[in-house]
Image (tube, rainbow, N blue to C red; front, side, top):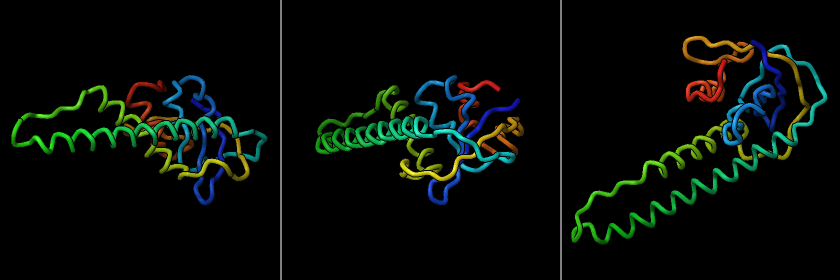
Length: 161
């Protein structure tokens, strides 16, 4: 199987975007289609990355806000309960849905920071082309290089290969 990719660099960080699956996955899974590295066989192409990068930046900002909000709520709740720790010995449990949501946003935030850093406004020359996709040893390889984002999406069942 082959996919269409566009590659560029932000500063010294090289990245590529899976254009084939961009419209197939939900909005909050799209940042995982942006991965570090550079698949082989790409040529200089004419493609505007602005829409892709703006969407990733918007999702990143939402994830940062959600992670910060979850952190503040946890600290606020723990601070209130800390005063009552000897009077009311209770076990505090967070709602499973809140933990899942905070974890999902944390995964988005961490992935984007690892691939792009915190800069989304300037990128270099854009290269486009087709890259092969294969699954080996439980990991997804794009153009012969392992792709963490594609592997994550494949493992959670969002991306079918």
